[in-house]
Length: 148
Image (cartoon, rainbow, N blue to C red; front, side, top):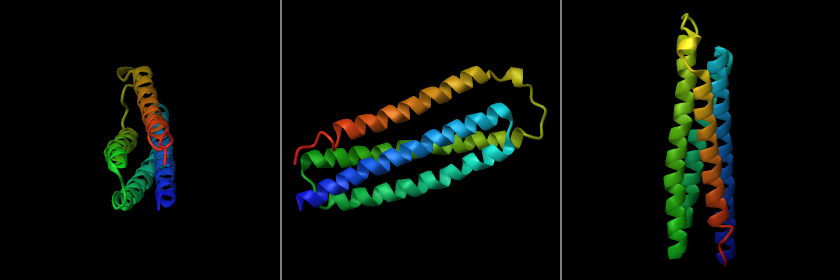
C-alpha cells in the first residue's frame, strides 16, 4: 500500500514538473511574440493555456486519489500541491493573456518605444524563474525527502 502511495507521489512530482515546463514555454513564447509582434507565435502560445488547464485537472485528480490514503505529513504535501497548481494555472492564463493582447495590437501601430520591452522581458524571466524554483522546492523538499 505504501509503495503504491509513494509511486503516486512521484507521479505528482513529475506532473508538476511537466506543468511548470508548459508554463515556462508559454511565458517565453508569449513574450517573444509580443516583442517581435508575431501573431502566429502568439496564437501558438495561447494553445499552451489549454494544455496547462488539462494538466491542472490531471494533478487535481491525482491529489484526490492521494487524499484517500495519506498520513498527516502527506496531507500537508497534497494540499500544498493543490494550492500550487491553482497559482501555476493562473500564471499560464496570464501568459495566454499577453499573447491575446499581442494579437489584438498586431493591426495597430503602437509605439514600441512606449513599451519598455527590456522590463517586460526581465519580468517574464523573473516569473519563469519563480515557477522553476517553486516546482524544484516542492519536488526536492516534498516527496523526494519523504521517507517511507
